[in-house]
Every structure is written in C-alpha cells, then in structure tokens.
Length: 199
Image 1 (spheres, one colour):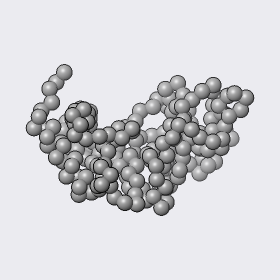
Image 2 (cartoon, helix red, strand yellow; image 1 turned 30 degrees about the vertical axis):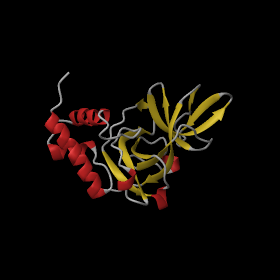
Image 3 (cartoon, helix red, strand yellow; image 1 turned 180 degrees about the vertical axis):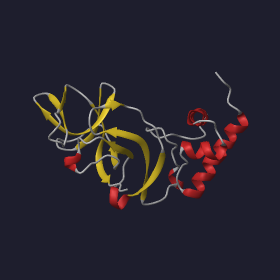
C-alpha cells in the first residue's frame, strides 16, 4: 500500500479546518482536489480516510466531511449531492458525492438530508422529471403512499411505496409502466421536495 505524504496530509487537514471556519460548512472532495492539486477524487478520499482514522476529522454516515457543530451555519442544512436515482428500472447503487448544497430549514426542514438528480420518466405523474433535483431525508422506514429511495438486490430506484399481502409494491407514477413487486427492500430515504430544473 502506498504511504501517504505526511506534509500533504497536514495540508489537507489545515485546508479543511480553514474552509470550515470561513464558510461554516466542510469542503467537498472536489474542493480539496482542486485546491491541493490532487490527481483524483479517489486520492482525496485516501487522505480524508487517513485523517478520520487519526481522529483529526469526522465523516457523516453518507461519507462527506462532518462540520463541527460550533462552526455550522444556523438555519441551514448541508445536503450532499450524491449522484443520480433511477425513476424507471432500478440501477446499480453508487454514491458519488459531487458537492454539498445549503438548504434552508424553514423550507426543507432539518434532519439528515441528501440530494439526487432524477433520471427516467416513471415518476412523471408525481411531477418528477429527468434532471430534477430531489431532496431526500435519510431514514429506513416509510409509510404507505410516500415516495422513497428503495434499494433492492443492490440496485436503487425512486418509487411510491405500498405494502400489500406481505409484499412490497414499488409503484411508478406512469400508467405505461408496471409495479415492481418484491418480498423485501431497504428504504434509504423519503422524498422531501422536488426542485425543478429548467433550461
């Protein structure tokens, strides 16, 4: 295993701390890569994991860098944008933190929020279209009728959730498409809001 450069490790920690103090949020992996001229995001991750292992920083359950409570901006929640979600056939799950976005608590509420780009047309009846930004509250339970991010057989999808006859029904809001019926699935979050993207 390649030994990490101690000087670069210290510079990474110093940049993270300085960024948090100035902005009230933590830098994204992409911020760090550009600022310190890392060759790739995977290299940034290696240094971040090393800092976490040494107790110099903490990461959230989603994997982004945790901002100390005393430095967090008040009245906002930082929501990492973690890639795409299929509004059609399920796709392989792959969390890829692209950036973090400030969401006002007065509009979106608090909690552990993350964001996804919508893909596909299976939820157009609920007003969700290709490219929309979806705000998701991370939780592992949901009530019937809620729109959820569901993980089944290692693949994720966005559908309306129902339970019937001991089965789980993941219902698309598009009359051209059929329900996905499974015995079990993992709920990763519940839709809070859909932000429309134009142009």
